[in-house]
Length: 262
Image 1 (cartoon, rainbow, N blue to C red):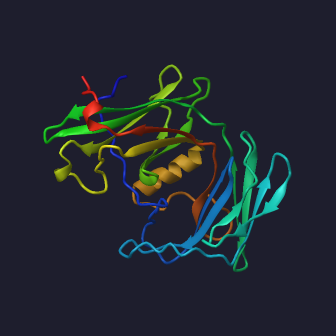
Image 2: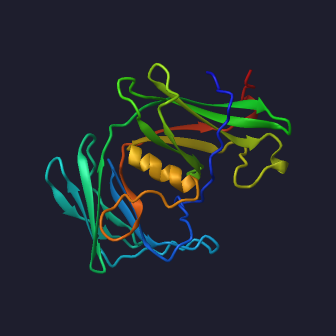
């Protein structure tokens, strides 16, 4: 395995992927996902960046998913946590639209559900930095060499809770394999930040999801302190609609067993 010379740090997020939006007057935020396990949609309001994140979910809406490929339309129901859900599985290579009606407004977004990729390797390596050794986590996953500009959303979880995430495209892919890597924990955990420290036995799970270029640009904008491009039609609203087939792989952190990168 080869690590490229430049390490890309990715922004840490708290549990539930608390995507923070640039400070504006409160707007509706729709975070909608469809997977082979069904639909999961949260409707909230933006929170000023200098205030604690408000995760109160709004349930005064009508939410539907339209499978544009099969023609099937189904309604989602709010659960006891305020999420709109439905167990109908998403089907790879189908096109979908979400329709949300709230307060007399209608919001719509379309997306394509890409088939899953495969994570072929996941490993740690110690690298030497001027201040300490740092554990770099590297994942390699399959990328179709016959298609250009494929995009991905990579999420890392520590013991089941979100650790960090990053969008990525396939410009660095070689022979049908793309590589993602990030710095994690220092060897001297006493000097490490609580948000990034790893301890012996921690389980790190990596998920890789192919996404559209529009979704990639939206995530990139969030990383750069912008609210991103509009992904919904209708009155101004923030958020996204993602139909995805995530691939997943886990590794247990054992610092004494990690090799040094040379």
